[in-house]
Image 1: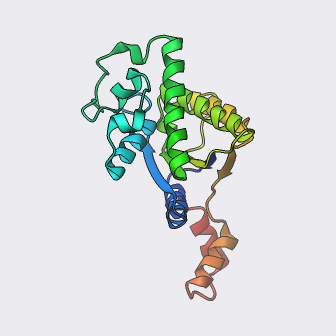
Image 2: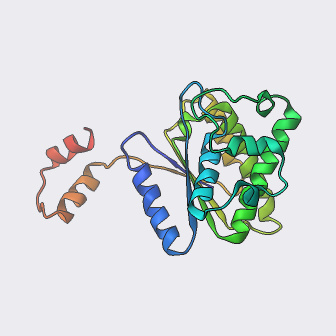
Length: 219
């Protein structure tokens, strides 16, 4: 798990895309999923988007992907499942047992895919994630960490996020993720004056005044 944290505009997505390009050159399948702040966004949206992308890219049927996995995961992945409204079947969000079954099933599906081909799962804007998606992410990463001691899974999970406030649900989720041995967090920061001068030099500006560099760095 790689967490790329930084304020808006610092290049998180660009860095992620560079990683994706390299992974694709090495033969990995890259699956993207985004998080949404919409009130009625589909639960577990980034994972659902990633699996729907796999289905489209590989012209695979839902039955072929899921095999004998439980019906609750099938409902999430149905092409006509609404992305902007509440789900018709309340069992998806009710009951700890049902939720645990769903989390385990989703992990098994990604595990099967990774056994067929190396996978990079990109989750964008984790700071927008709903509580259900954060809970699934915790469970997913814990399962990845457990599998590492047995048979390492050829799956890289990368998430971009803005630095969380100290007391919000994202901060608590990130703390849990960072406790896992497979987690590597990178905090991106802006350029300081020295960096600005070096960048200017690489662009052919041989003598950028120090005052101008400081103003650019603090803009």
